[in-house]
Length: 526
Image 1 (cartoon, helix red, strand yellow):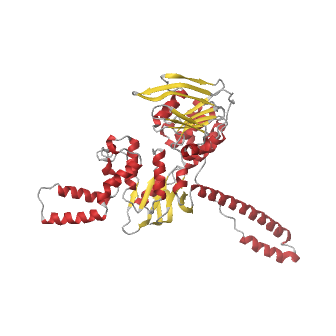
Image 2 (tube, one colour):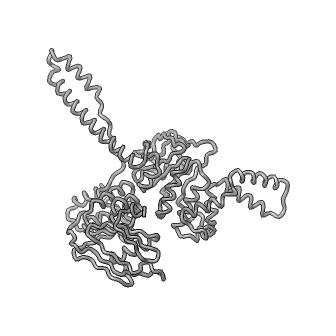
Image 3 (cartoon, rainbow, N blue to C red):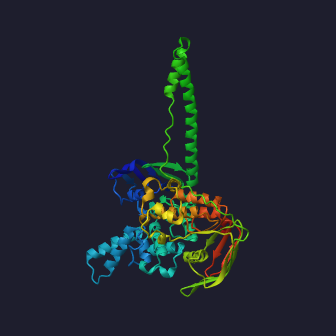
């Protein structure tokens, strides 16, 4: 159990949270959601004790242990992987280190023997003998091979380090588990395992995530941050979304009826207040009018960009034909005689264990890279648009957003361009921000804006949800569902895959492919 009492946090004149009162109880999993900049990660730090509050306090149950998923991949470079996981239980790891230091001595005093006995008792109480097997099991469940368990963190690829930090957070059955974007860099198998782990976890979990399917699978409650307040909803993300939308509609409909009643009463009062025979009725209606209170409808701080991919020229019958595409990188064949044909209406998600394989294929198709052999034949009417996973090269220029968009698409009327950028959440002075200092999310929205203005009839998207918030992901999802052309994409977002794709191509470790014209969910079941 963790309770927040009257918590406020101010940075100078800016108030991030104000008088937050909320209780997170055992056996529940809370999804913490809110617009970018609303303070989700900061609130987790407040709960963990890493961030002081301006007012109020955070109270946890007696002797309860908090575990917090940290994102510092380089903090433990010189530590063994297995030890980093066990460090998730500070008390146990401290006892283990103290034991090792004592047993490494050559001579022992009576005081040392007494200390050893106490340490052994505490070690036993904390199930220390199972610490290493438990840590190893967590690592294996997350897909880290056994021979990596005793390497140092510095020897691991960054994506495996992320998994180690997650294993550290999960280790030792913490009473309160705080997870900030736990599915980042996880493969499908690891995400599925984590979902089952959290569903069966009996203590308190609070999660920040942009993965809608993940929130739907594991959350029993949604804690929504809006304008510095946190409101609790029972149910998963979809239930919150539908409930909040329904509440807004009901309040608007209620206000509409009240406004009609107010006009009716005001009309009657204006007509008959001076009429002696109707004066009592007019007075009665005045009292009724005073009692009518309109519901205060506060607009949400979250904003949804308008993402709609219009097509300049419809595609003909011939779309794309790939034959015997082969690519070798650093002596490894990552694409081996790959052949497929894109048909009218295809929206294909590409799967592979190694992200580099998918990115290489998309770079070849877009012309950014070349294959060692094979052919790519585009239909004559096809206008492809490419959204790369790494977009940094596009922003290494000294231009503001207006100028940056202008170099790709010439719109003479500044009002039209500003209106378009406004729908992509670049309003007012934002359009004069230098693009080389934009956040990851802002750069992603710039790239989507560029693609929409180019009006391609064929889209190639490499991890398009990277850096986007939930609102932007929802808008992108809707835009791709409505797109009338063909799409090749790769994404870790389950919802995007399951609602957009009508075909799945998996690139195998030997460079061959498995091609199935079935929905994503059916492919996973097979």
